[in-house]
Image 1 (tube, rainbow, N blue to C red):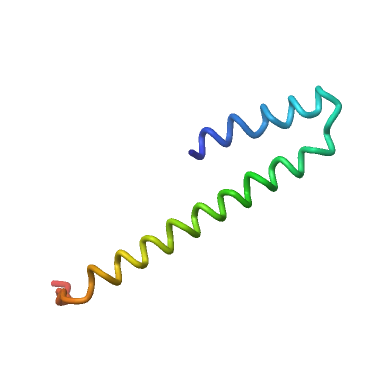
Image 2: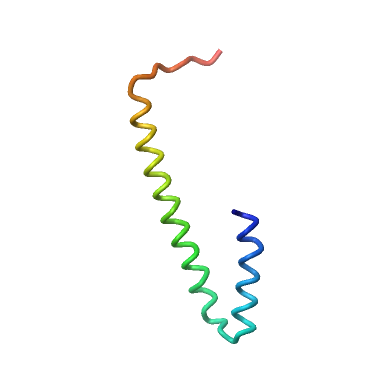
Length: 64
């Protein structure tokens, strides 16, 4: 995903500037950031719920 953003971000910024809509650049990248934050939050909530369900009966192993 990082490489996709590294390619798509400058491309989108250039397209917006070429179309004369440079003021929309911040809005476009802010929307991408907010949507990423929402998806990461959903994944974290799903992962923590799964970990809590799986970890109830397991014993801890010591490091050797």
